[in-house]
Image (cartoon, rainbow, N blue to C red; front, side, top):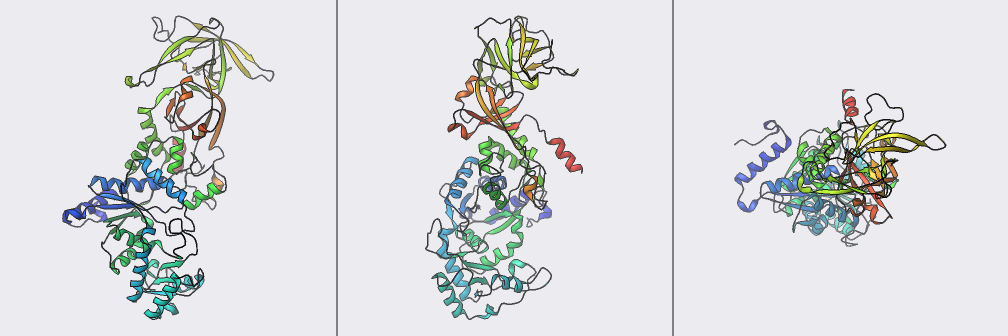
Length: 565
C-alpha cells in the first residue's frame, strides 16, 4: 500500500484513518493508537473543542486505542483551576472517559528543563538578551530573511550558566529568554530561532512558586506527546506551519516516542465566535451572564441551554473532518438538536403570552380530566391527565379580532378545537380601558370532546391551552443568535453586531401543573419549541425555562439570502 496523501482522500477524516491504518499495519501490538486532547485551562471549552474531543476520543475508540486528557498549563498568567474543573466536567458530559490518562504539562516541568539543557549542550539553543522589539526587528518579514542575534554565538558554557540562573530566579521577566538555534533565513517564520522558555514570576495553580521559567507551547507540546507515547497528534490547521518545529523538537531530543502531527480544519460556526479572547471579553464586559450563558457557544452554555450531548456528538459526526476551513451553518447544529429531542422529549402544553378564556356554558366548579399522549409516536412514553375547567389560558397570538381570511385560529364568532378537549366558539370580547383585549367569553360544544363518539366534527384550527385554576406560573427565556451577522469576525468590531434581541424574557407564562416537579429533562412545548428548566430555577422562587431550539429553523431564509449575496 502506498503512503496516503491528501489527494488520495475525499475528506480529512478519511485521510486521518488511512494514516492510522497504515501505522497499525506495521506497528507491534504494544504500539496501539494513542491520541490526546490537550486544552489550555484559560477559559471554557466551546463547540470547536467538542469537534476535537469527538475526533481524538472517537478515533482512539474506533481503532482500539486510548486517548489522554492533558492540560496544557504552561502559562499561569491566564490559567485557573476553575477552568480545569469546567473542562473535566465538559468532556465527561459529552460522553468520553480518559480513565487513568488525566495529565498536565506541569507534570513534566523537570523533563522540559532537562530537554532544554540538552539542546543547549548540543549547541542547538541559546539564551537571548534582546528586547521583544529587537527580536521582532531581527526576525525579518515574510519577504525578508531574519538576521542572527548577537547572542547566538554565546558559548555553551555561558548559555548553561545563564539558563540555570534564569531557573534560579536571578533575572526579571523579559530580561532573558531561551531560543532554539535553527535558521534565521527559513521561509517559515516559526523556524527563525523560536522562543523555547520565558521568565514568568507568577504562582502556578499546581506547582506554586517552584518554577519561575515556563516553556512555550511549541516546545512543551511535542515533548509531552512523546513522553505519553502519543502516536498521532491531531490538531487544527493553524498549527500546520508549526509542524516543522514540532518535528524539529522531537528529532533533536532523546525522547521515547516519535509522534506524528496531523492537521484538520477548525470548526467555524455561523453567527458566533470561538476565539477564547473574544469569548472572555463577552463574559468580562457583561455582554453575557457568564461562560455558561445559554447564548454562548461554550459546551457549558449549550448544556445549560438544553442541548443534549448526543446531539452535539451527532453534529460533529455530520460535519466531518476536512483539510480546508469552512463555515458551518448554525441550522446544522440546531437540526441535530431537533432530531434528538423530537424522538426523546415529552410533549406538554404551555402558554407563553396568556389570554384568559371563560367558557360561559361550563358548570361552575366542575373539572374534567382530558387524556393526552406524552409522545405522538411512542406509546411507551405513556399518557397524562390534563384538568379542564371553566377558565383557561390560550396564546394571545391564537386570537385576532380582525382576522384575515386564512386565519384558522380563534376570532369573533369563530370556532377552534382545544387540543385534547372540546370545540369552542368566541361569543364576546372583553377589553380594558385602553382597548386591549383581556378576556374572551366562549361557549363549548359538549358533543365534541376529543376521543368521544361525536368528536369528528371538523374545524380548521386546533390550539393549545392550560387550565387557569391548575396551571403553574413560570418565566420563559427565549434565546436566539448572539450576533446579527453570520460572520461577526469579519468586521472591525465584533461587538458592533451583537444581537440586541438575543434574549427575550417572558414573565407570567402558564404551564401544565406536572411541570412544577420537572428536573432538567427537556420537553416540547407543543406548537412552540423545545425547552428545559434553567439552573436559576434551583435558587429562585419559581420555574424558569430556557428555549433550547424552536420547532423550525426561522433563520434558514436569512442564511440562504446571505449565501446568495
